[in-house]
Image 1 (cartoon, one colour):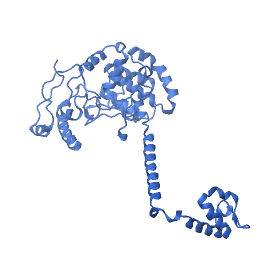
Image 2 (cartoon, rainbow over the protein chains, first blue to last red; image 1 turned 90 degrees about the vertical axis):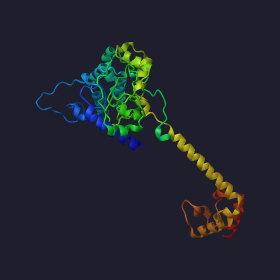
Image 3 (cartoon, rainbow over the protein chains, first blue to last red; image 1 turned 180 degrees about the vertical axis):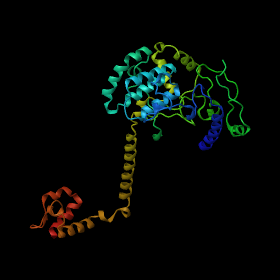
Length: 157
Length: 212
């Protein structure tokens, strides 16, 4: 049932996407052909022919590319540097998305793994000023360093 | 306010495919923070009126550490949330903590710490197993002691006595076992053997030792 529904929606969506998507649509649903060079989601350096590499402009990214970047940060092996974190937070501010900023901070904290107690204070030290500038409250103030609500696990139902 | 992008007319073939979908082509009041986006009508049978924000051909929502930013927001937009979104466009220092939490829960179902939290399912597993074992012991005891037909013959004293006689003759387990508890010079069990006897068996043990 789900498969037939997905097929129907996929068919209509494919037809819709191929005809209707234009660059500059506000949010969501873009094909990969509409994205440009993507050095922020590749493990190897990306060179666009005929141009010099521009400085990372994560602050001018839109919500779609920011989310791709954050998913890549979660998948990659390492904690991002404070400069990158500051740019991403500025990008969240430009997109008027506060929830994404807190989600990104949670990801950065949990990428520390067993060394969370060493990496997280250092990163908070480095990005504290920008967070106060933008008005983002820390995870401790939100109460998201520990679980807040309990949700039954789907595997246990 | 006109939408930024307008959908062109659809083919007849597609309308036959979408016939089962609910009627979403009627004009709706556009709440603030909930503008039209491409795919809104096609995907509404699956995701409702939630906004698509990320990558995904058929967008769905999941909470996981490996994919922290899913393709859609979690909740649909109400009037209150629409007003919050307008407030979000301004200075974030004016947002209260409650506003920030509602904004987070509107986009995400659970925090990543809640994803990592343990479920405590091991208690249920051990408890269920304990109940089943108790039922098993109950059944064996009830059925085993009710009818001598269901009693295994290896439990009767005759069998055990013949078994011990055989074992002692063969001198099995001379270091730590039964032959070490039997005094072969005086042909009786050493006093430590008394631990394993009950009133019924002690009689048969005495007769055995007298036999030997």
